[in-house]
Image 1 (tube, helix red, strand yellow):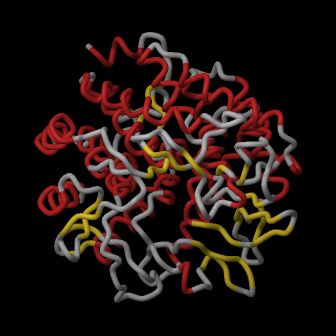
Image 2 (tube, rainbow, N blue to C red):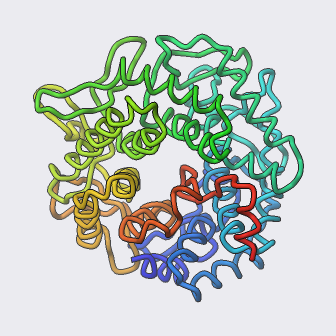
Image 3 (tube, rainbow, N blue to C red):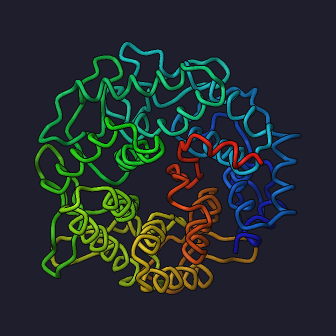
Length: 450
């Protein structure tokens, strides 16, 4: 599947950001501010890990010869960080090849002006040429988004370590200071924060989009620090406690889910993006207080089961973008606008963690169901495409092979069926785009480079 996705991208769209597999051409989009080759950079480490050596060399050659960082355009700070910076850092750590390190550092420098705000909380959009930054037009009252400014920590610490320049680490440590200072309603973190005042702009809380990876980066920051970053661990533990107290619910049919919170009113829906949380909670459970370990493993398993149900209850056996627990419907999309599937990885991500941490064979079984469904419904003549409605067996395709399909979905599926020592969870943490970054064991670097 990886080879098929890559070969078609290379054939029809090399150097563009994504492949459009139905029309057999490339797509550039406006998320990356003029940067190109999102699929190349996202796929590098997957190609390397899967030992697709020839394909990896093709990708590396493109990075060396054609990856231009002198661009002028509006980029998402978050997307450029997780896909490009994360992909380049991971590939550098896996291969030791300098080109990936130097590109990562050069790109990291271009992101720094986004932090020039009264609080140091970065704005979401940056012009990579001029350094001008601003907030997304749709974000309430010029605010910055929790998942976006909260998902820089892992990459920026590595940028400081590799460059010897403390500025990257300082920027993300300051974000934590601001978050620790501001009052949390019921211990929860709302999704919108003003980069000017450092206060919440409204009280919408979600473990899905807008919030998701902030929580993931707290537990992973602690793991990546070789368990020395106790502040991150405490923030994670406190946040999870508040989430469990206020947002975790059980449906009439016995399914555990995480609702969204709108100023105290619950919205009984869970986004596909929130399905990463089964894996996250399992990862954290390993390191919880002895008497809470089993409790959190159970919670992780229940949430992962609910996410599996969102797949099992659809005609294609792929899950919708969001599913609800209201009006007698459970784990199904009730709105037309939420029935699509864009090759997202979050559910198989949780299967991979649950498998590695429990070795219950059902997680591999569930993963294999996804593989079969992807092959049946998303594979087209020239690549893989998202579908517009998971509840019909003859779905229309959206003509987009997302770069994260190669970075995440296929990598997590591959790791689900690998031995545990392939990217062992003891030695690597995955950024939110599934790019592996090394745990800071003092002598780890030396052993990688040998």
